[in-house]
Length: 237
Image (cartoon, rainbow, N blue to C red; front, side):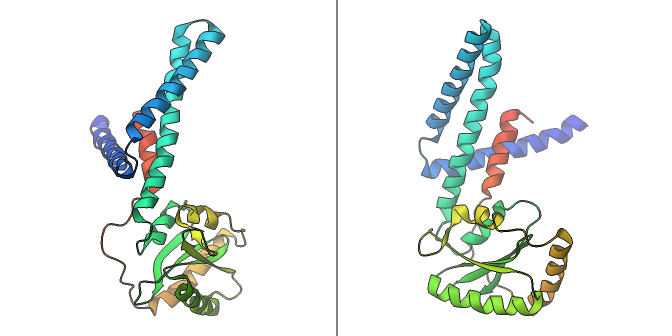
């Protein structure tokens, strides 16, 4: 019975890996050859080290194969992440998808504010406090962020509020691919219990808002999911 339960899970992971590979190949045509080359170089290096140190081909093979797989996984994860960001960069709602790379412990709410021009503000609550992320036209988004900071300050009290504009990395904006890391590097100002309290207080603010009409169409795939699928499938779990 346990084997039957594991089979669908393994199939799902392989399907997820195949999907990530197809998405990556759309913008990275030579990804297959690149991964093969990385595997062969890394596996060859491991084999050579094992042979030279221990003087036997078997330890070299045992060392080379995992090293080659690990190198291919790392390269695939990075290139898949780059391809996925390229796929949705410039689309409305892209920042919300980029925030999907945040680890557990962050409360992300997409589209807490918007304009008819599809300028959006997303909110992240975590140990730094409240982080408001705007995307769209920078000049319009700055005004929207200023208004949102005032609204949140009335509810959050002394909790620190940060504002970030997601873009291409120019003109004081943070590039989409760096957005998650930028948020995670903010200083830790709150204890976990205080984070929970802030989230509870913000629910009253959210209850008074109209529902945000998020853009139609498929939302970008979480890049971390592609890396996780690659690791799990390569390990055969």
